Image (cartoon, rainbow, N blue to C red; front, top):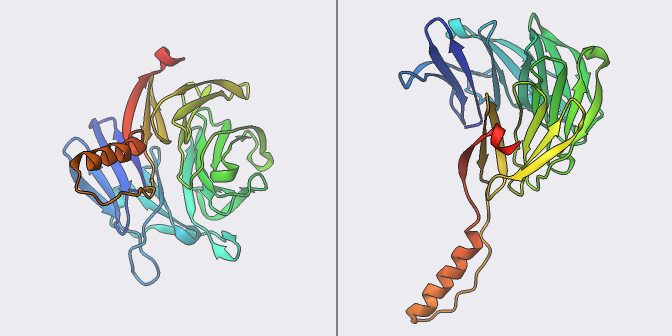
Amino acid sequence: MYEFDYLAENESETLYLFATSKDQPVHMWDVNKSIIFTQFRCLNQVEETITPISIRVNHVHKTLLTGHQKGILKLFDIEQSHEAPDTLELAIKKRRKKQPISSIDYSPKDPNFIALGSFDSSVYLIDQRVFNKVFHRLTDFTQKGITQVKFSNDGKYLLVGSRKEYNSIYQWDMRFPREAIVCYNYSRLNESNQRVYYDLDEQSKYLYTGNSDGSIYVYDIQKGEFAYSFPAMFDSVGAVSIHDQFLATSSGMRHFNEKISINSSSDDENNDQQQIEEDDIYKNFKNGVRVWQLQKIQ
């Protein structure tokens, strides 16, 4: 699975989950009934299925945005899933190669205002009402691809995460989008190409981000400074998510076994000892999810 999002129907108290995975259409699940309610098929010019690597649901307009390789963006009407989507192909290039749209987010204060992150190290700003063009581009702040874009709940700031060596989170002041500036940037640890997610609390005061050493860094984005950190997992923290007073953290990354020389012997005790030593190497490589109560860790 590449990414997921949700849509809550307040009138019917139904929750829908949208998920994208390799070589599949976007599935819209009815969570209450545990069934696929409908699906959204993304096709190229020759009617082949293309997989979105980023998706986002607009809760106000009931639309679904899907971001693809080669800078392709598609806009679906959720209530008319059988209809062909609107398509926008951005001129996103780096080293003469078209780059994917890696992350999408809407402004909570303006459901037509969309930010698109790309692996060409830029963020593209578009208006959903004028879907066929970009009205501004944020660039020249990192040399690596963008892995996540996220608006603060008041729409004032846009948090932009980049990958690996330039693995900082940049805080853009978006009150005047065409004159947006980076007001702060926050460091974090990531030694791999893994996408490391971050999230904001409901007051948009604290930014929580995972690190490759298993810790969580917390920053005060109103002051632009480090607040505190705490050990969370035994492996790289790839994602964090906040709901109300709870923080969920997940860990796990790909590890490659080191070569361990094992002498051929019929001695069972030696073989058992070798197995114990091998297990010790990987005992801290953990995959899992933990839920924290924010009041207890602040």
